Length: 436
Image 1 (cartoon, one colour):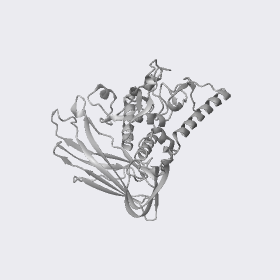
Image 2 (cartoon, rainbow, N blue to C red):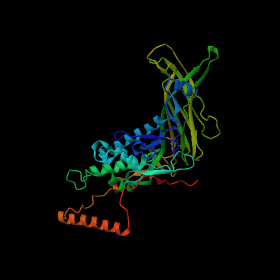
Image 3 (cartoon, helix red, strand yellow):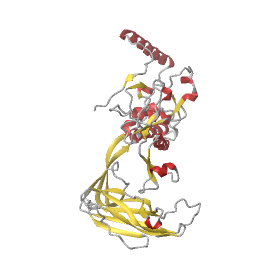
Image 4 (cartoon, rainbow, N blue to C red):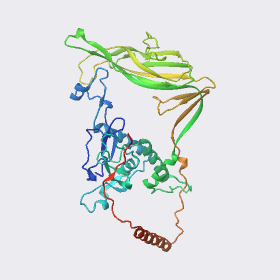
């Protein structure tokens, strides 16, 4: 359907198509999905009070659960579409039509069958998943727009957020740039195809350096305390939600400061409690932060580091109580405590700390100093989008007509001489296969 984007579900890692994902009718292109996104074991909010929640939830977390379905794949594409709109507010309906193999002779001329530029960009930047064993990818694929692989299980393939957003950034820059300074955009009618030709020029990996004294990462959460009672309340067990988190301590760091902030008493929710941070700094599996008996709402730990790079796991534990009233407005009877954790890592003078945000768990904030931090990351450099090329407008209409006719005649003669049959390519092309 031209007005919607059909999304197939892939495995969590994008290695194949989920068995439950609906397939199109082979050879009937307008039944195929458009693109695919991960839809297996996707972490989502738990639908409390439903049969799905009752049968699938565990005591580890009553707020979130892993769910599979095309309903979990579609939100990935919805979020990506929002990022694309943010990068390119000028997105509009494209000149391309939805794939079709029916008997409607007007399909490719009607305005109502054209797809949006969001869908077109997603299709042109998707990664077609190769067949690898029994991963749900068909043996053969059809030719989609611009002869890209297109099959009834995954459409054009797994969406690629980096490439899709890069195309949108380039497209918006080309449509809005005023390079000649006359106060008007030079190329407001730039097409997606023109942006696709140059968008890879703005993508590159770059090492950004900064002089710092420390790097800080901060995250927020909500710790909850439950009593899981049986028919005999005295036999009930208690547990709390999993608040696990991890950060990368870069090589060369010598000291770490952990700060916890929370609200000990919440009068509105009739809740009170105290919590502590658990952290395995040295990697031996035990907690290296001593519990603190403090109800003032702030706790601080100072930890010495040995300069080695390592992942440090964090968690939250504590005790809490809540006055319980059977109120229809109170969805969660359990006590919940919101908190903020900040970890500041010192960078000694003269130390070069490498950070790779693509693999680190949290964004960092830098404090000025004489140490050095090098961040290696993907960047979009729009400076690579140059001025518009000359369009040859000085040529007369007669010369342009002559040039078009010459090209047309030359193409026909070349086709006849080479014995090329001019016609529509039939579907059923052998699909690429991935080596085992």
